[in-house]
Every structure is written in C-alpha cells, then in structure tokens.
Length: 451
Ligand code: HGY
Ligand code: MN
Ligand code: MN
Image (cartoon, rainbow, N blue to C red; front, side, top):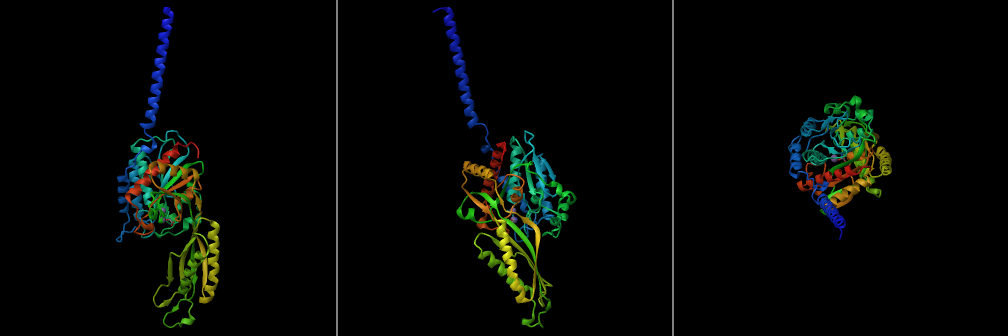
C-alpha cells in the first residue's frame, strides 16, 4: 500500500468519524428539543394564586347574605377595578382604560405584529349576584398575564387582557369594541342608577369619544373568554371543561301596562282597570308562549314595579321587563310577535293597554370559531381533561368579540348549574384547570400565523 493511499484512507476515516459525531449530536439535540426544552404545555399557572385572587376580589361588594352587590359603575366596582389595575401595573405591562371604560393590559410580543391575542371577561355582577360569573374568567386572565411575565414566556403576538365594562347591563364594553353602540345605548339607565354615559365616565372612560374604541378585524388575531357554565351540563355529567359551540342572542324590552289607579276599598271588583292583574296574566302568557313553540328558546319577565305602589290603591300602571333568548334571531322575533299579539285579549279583558319599547342592550347570537374550538379541544385532551361541546344559554362579551375576529369560549362546571345567585360556586380545582387550558390555548393560537 502506497503512503499516499494510506493517508487518503486515514483522511476518509476522520471525515466519517466527524460526520458520525455530527449526526449523533443532531439526534441528541432533537431529543433534547422534543423532551427537555419548554413547550407551551409545560408552562404552569399558579393554581393557588388564581384562587386567592378570586377570594380577594370577593371582598369588593360582598353583602350580608354572601351575595355580590358589585353592579356595574357602583363604588364596589370602582374599588374592584382599582385592585385589578394595581395587580396589572405591578406586572409592568401597558395598562389603560379605554373610552368605553374597558380595562386593557398589553404585553408586547416579539414580532411587532399588529394583531393581538386577547382574553378576558367582566367583574361586574347582577344585583345580589354571585362571585364567579365573569370573575373567574377575569382572575384567570390576570393569572395568564402574571404567568407570561413571571416565566418570561416569549410570544409572537401582543397579548391583551380585557376586563369589559357593564357586561350584565347588555355587554356594553364589548359592544363598544364591536362598534355596536349608539347614543341610545349611552342613555340606558343601569342597575347602579347611572346611565351608561355617566357610568363610563365614573370608570375613567370618556363618553364623548366613546365611538373611537371600535376595533376592526385587522386588530384581533384571536379572543378567548373563560367562564363558568351557569348551567348544569358539566356539573351533572362530571366533565372538566366545556368547549362552547355558540352563544344565544338576547333581546330586552320595557313593557308598560296602563290601567286606572283607584281606591282599593270603594271600587267594586267588576269596575276595575287593574294594571297589576293584566300584568299577572301577561307574565303567565310569556311563559306559556315560550313553552308552546318547539325549540330551546327562553322568555322571562324579570323585573316588575306597580305604581303608585300602595296597599290601598289599585295599580294604575305597571312597568316590567321582557327578555327573550335563542340561538336564532328569527326565533326571538317569532316568540316576541306571539307575545305581543297575546296582549290584545288581555287589554280587552282588563281594560288596559300594553306598550313595548326595545331596550338598547341587544346581543346577536354568535357561533364560536371552529379553529379556536379545535385548539381548545386539542389542548384539553393534551392536559387530560374530559370535555363536552355545548352551546351557551347565557350572554357573554365573547359574542360581540366574535364580530371583530376569531373567538372561542371555555366553560368550567357551575355547582348545580346555579348562577346569578349568591349560591354560585365553582371548585378551586376546576378554576385552576380552566386557567391552565386558557393559557395553553392562547399560546397555541399565538403560534398559528394566520387564523
Ligand atoms: O345575562 C347573561 O346572560 C349574562 O350573564 N350577562
Ligand atoms: Mn351574568
Ligand atoms: Mn358573565
């Protein structure tokens, strides 16, 4: 063997060894990437902290019966919002109140993309409500933000936390973002006694520039709201999380019944024009009509006031609310028309008149985005949570966000399906599960360049 030949052989051996080493390293690196480097599934939310924050939030507006008096625009709500903003400010994210009073907190992504990944809910409650509706989703959103900051998670998009204004009085804040409010909405008087215009100014918004908050499809990559189910499907079946298919639309009306106020002792029973009696028959008729049509529609008279409101005066006027909900706008119209036409006979029978005026607090039915539903479902499977796909009978800010961009909702179980009641409850474990699923789903959506 010539010297030249043996040198060539040795060189060849060296090259093969180097290539082998390179291949081995490549295999090892891939292995490490797959199994040891962080993936979204390995970012853990702090289960104890999210539940502790919810306990603290309860203190703003808790009443003697354990219920929640934190109606939108009340002093209790102002205090609760100050608490949430303090927590957000401490995280060093960009916190602001928009003209509609919505709290927005943005953490910048690394790519300077114009569309945000948004998430959030509301912290206002119905009168004597519970401590979980909206509030679980809001504290989960805070926990997501805190986890992103604390664990220095790099995201492609900006992540925006939203706490919406006056959800319970007609999803006001999210409707403003969707550009669905007008002067009439601003004049609506809310449970706090303030109009929406007065209320948003109390929150630090600006009713004079409110229409400027409208966002466009170019602004939103994706939005997810975590919420308690407020029904009993998950609770009854022992299922961990719900993937929401769609949200019912709802419409509200003021109903005024006019009769004749007269002496309750001297007016014989056959000579009365009793607005309360006519209203009683109306309430029964609303229930009967909603049940008589096939489907899942619901109709409710939830507020009633007799005037002048004295034991010894036959009510001359009654003011009521009417609410109808369904996944189809046509069905809502059909039920409304049947209810209105049923009042003709009541008017005649009791010598009264009925007047219906729409309240500007309407939300359209909204389907959730299929791709986001799949992301939530896949992430729930990876986390080992049992899941159910289901519609929402309650209204949510997510239905207005769905008009702006791809939107999804996650539900967690509500104890015995009770909601809008001081007895509302979800377990700390379910709250932690929901929060983890929210984080994982948002991070998965962040990786998707286009939805
Ligand atoms: O009334 C609703 O459905 C919601 O809880 N705001
Ligand atoms: Mn509610
Ligand atoms: Mn809610």
